[in-house]
Length: 63
Image: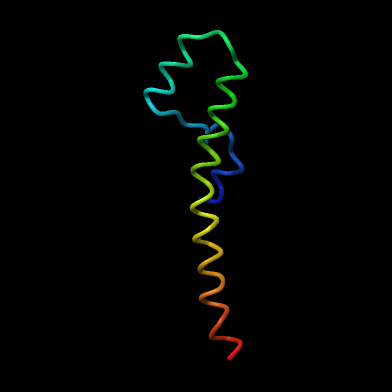
């Protein structure tokens, strides 16, 4: 999953409603902003879960 963060063309997916709103307008910066927001919303839970697993698996080795 981490590889998707390095492949912006693959990771910039859109939901159906967002896509309909973006296609009806002419503002490319709005489309780019919505795509970036979707990527951030997708990435944050994976980062949090990764940090949680890091602390869970790191703890037994110290004791």
